[in-house]
Length: 478
Image: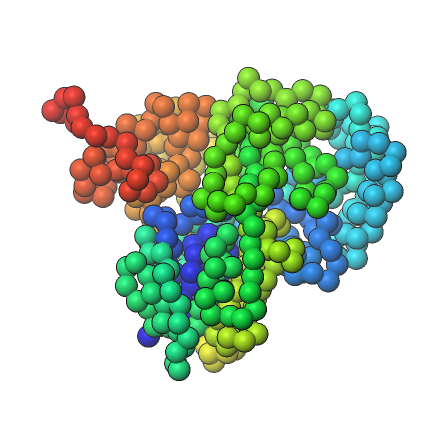
């Protein structure tokens, strides 16, 4: 019997685990994929939303504001890349200007500070590459960008070093209420637990509906993106939004926390909860809509395209807290945008509720800060030379695009909940994130993974057991 079983190791599940790890308890996180951050949390905009567009009084409005206000210091403590670049919301016709003013008023009702309406000239002084069709804008100075991979991984690492267990490749098959709590059946065994926390993303409705008569319905909303080379990462300074619609915040243009340029997402409701395919039509729509915001979209510098699914609940709001008819079953469901921004605050809220319900006590000396990672590329020459003297692997560049060293890759594998796949290394150390998308460095990453994990290179996969890379060798000295 465990105290708490968390289902899902995306950013929300990792946030709950991180917050609960500050208490004296026995808790387990189960994840159906091979690693943390494998679904929605790895395929989103990485935006820290200011909180102006959520309807006042909603869960989205509440947790967006809380998450936004805590994010800067939170990322410092966890050594997560964060950049407070501010947001601009654009108006393209005179009819948009009253809507923009109403958006500002709504944001102020939500508690967002510093919102300011701008003329077209003022907006273009801030962003010279705005399209000539812009007639006005709203500035949200608290908007920011964050590395979504690191935000998830860092919290999971902190949870792990504080004693939370993580079990991967474990998909939930059934949940049954018992006299002492719950029996959760997975394809890697059964778990008896006092409390279940449902952080299952687009499948959170399915798990809730196994035990609760208050049925949820999540529609996966697919969004496609284009990511550009760092060479054009300074095309805009702010995150550039268009007026929000019933389908979301629209296609944005933004720098990323790591210095790339990103445009997207599209918004199409799909039936398949595994459909993260990209389409020519969807990507063309993203480019077309981005051109409404900026003078020119540098499509020649696209290095990859990807798609993610937003967990859109039928009623349009986050579903957070204990199911009204199932004591001990806590939901974090329908966590679409601004879910990434809200996640740390959601984690704190649910952990506090569970601690009260179970009578948990805080640990005397929990670890609250994550040891920093070395980003060799950012160091000055003297520091680089010293690092190489201490560890020659810092002098071995594996990823030329991002200047990632063998030492950084080994650290990504050796850290708590370390990488076991090529994508795991990519998300932790950025090897393969650059212009060639792993075309040069993947063989070397495979070799290092095999050495560190003590397995045959043929066993190394891209992301899971179905994504094999090598099928044999044409030489004997691999």
